[in-house]
Image (cartoon, rainbow, N blue to C red; front, side):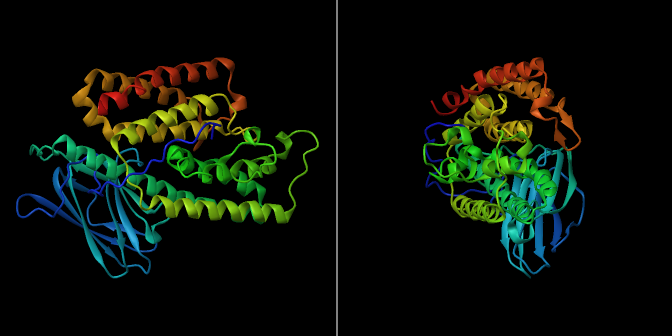
Length: 391
């Protein structure tokens, strides 16, 4: 979080739409024709799809809930983040269909029993080229509606994963298992950072959860992730820092869990507009420029590159959700954005260690400068997408 006036709320009253990102919108199951029909059985620990591939065109997933919790099913894009299609609120013993007009490519399937967490049995799924030319996905208005609905699904998914991750993190912290809590800290926070601009729209919820010590007002109570971060990395704190007693640990952790649950409830009814998506992408890159690339966000843990990647993930999801619409208005801008996003990702990938990243303090001045320069190179064209889309 950076210290600034709160952004306008990313909320509107527009209606919901079918949830498709890389595929065309197919509101109802097609009648006749070449349609691939697959079954999905969701249980507490499995998501069994009847086939791992299907030909391009109309694909129907009939999802049956054989578990004892309400569940949902996702078709994800090849990055495992973007949502191509989703069907949710499938009660025990019930079935629902997800219908997509799928283009050739690589995807993932995953079920989410309980509708929280990262889901179970995430598996590769391939759409082969059937040779049949797919119908156009609709006019621009339909594409906009689809993009808005898909981003809503993405936000809900990230917050669901944040809920379960925060509960696990808080339990370890309260129990005094600092090694486990430190290991969970950065991987859990990525779900927050990917949708940070949305979270910042909810008044004082964001400062309660993500305020840095340097941004505290006189007399302001300090809670949230960074208050706990300081206690988990006391060797990095200032001289004389006294680790928190158990009762303060419990209070901070319980508040964080409660605030995360509040965030979860607030995002359920959100709707988005095209300009909010474009401005959200810009805002996430601003977060990178003003906090992550400077090393100011994770002042004690130095896990800034996890946040950096998460902000870029969120910005890229937003951009790719509107990319086809933007291409109609400014193909040159799309080409430039594709190039700059790829260049920034290449620099970030060079800093990976296993499932994570090097600590910020391990970066050389040249590496920091290179990342900063590439953030600026991406920020300039990204700043033009709102005008290109809505003016």
